[in-house]
Image 1: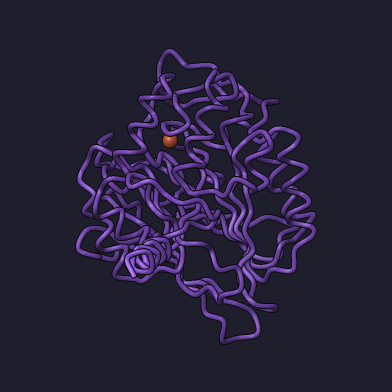
Image 2: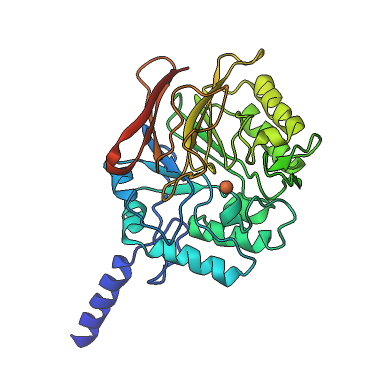
Amino acid sequence: MLRFSLCFLFLIGLFSCQRPANGALQTTNAPVHLPLNNSQLLETIAFGSCNRQDESQEMWQYVLRHKPQLWMWLGDNVYGDTEDMQVLADKYALQNSHPEYQKLLAQCPIIGIWDDHDYGVNDGDKTYPKKKESKKLMLDFLGVPANAPVRSREGAYQSFTIGPKGKKVKIILLDGRYFRDELKSNPTRNPRYFDNPEGDVLGEAQWQWLESELTNSDAQLHLIACGIQFIPEEQIFEKWANFPEARKRFFNLLKKTKPAGALLLSGDRHIAELSRIEMYGLPQPLYELTSSGLTHTWSGGSEGEPNRFREGNLIIMKNFGVMRIDWKGAKPAVTLEVRGLGDEEFLEKRIEF
Ligand SMILES: [Fe+2]
């Protein structure tokens, strides 16, 4: 009887353990990540960037109100800024320890890409010596399964296709750090860097991968995310526009492959804004939503900054983004929202494809 009872208790214990997507049992300190359901109809996504792990995590309660089916990290997910991997690991552990963040992990799967601070160095590029080690820590933080393709290649870029046939969303997370060429600092700091006219952002392997992802896709919506901004040109900080040849290559690739329902997402800037560009060869205007930051915001100047592509206001408030996808029509429509503390809405824009 005792043997039977012990066996029963053992079985209860075994099945009450939560298992992450990769099937490994978690230790008490590591959070359980909900697996991504690739066949679900995706209607609500939330996203954000620039999150100091040692600052108040009060934004999550407002993110959770929207019951997102997916959370997308857009970079600077923690502020690592170190070549000491124990320091970086501790910072990820601190982020994981926040009860507010644990509520998010319990409610929806998360995916993401890094920017410079979580990569390990402010405005970092391909020369950062700990990029391999840092990548592993980020993928662990995101709960990326051990057998995911990203684990066995250079760089942290990934794609996800979610949804039933005819209502698919492809999310492409671009790594703008691991292969990025160097920028020369401008001593005047205005702008921060001199452009690198021939310099690259993605590296050849990622370019080939991106072309293949855009070409071989049956998705109705393509969300393409990168830490740094794609469209804005005037702002004085890092941007794709610092690499004019690479930026032209990116837009030319969109013209060539014409992905259905293309939409750009970025972070990094401690501001939020919607940019819109019209280009010969693209079937319709291309939008980019920048959402940053979750825990802190730009203190550079209340006068703002120019962006000739901006539609609506420059938002200098802590914020996150919500994307609602309307599948009722023949083609999807997307409503983009930028929201802040108290769930205050700063921006809303519906885009028909
Ligand atoms: Fe950044």
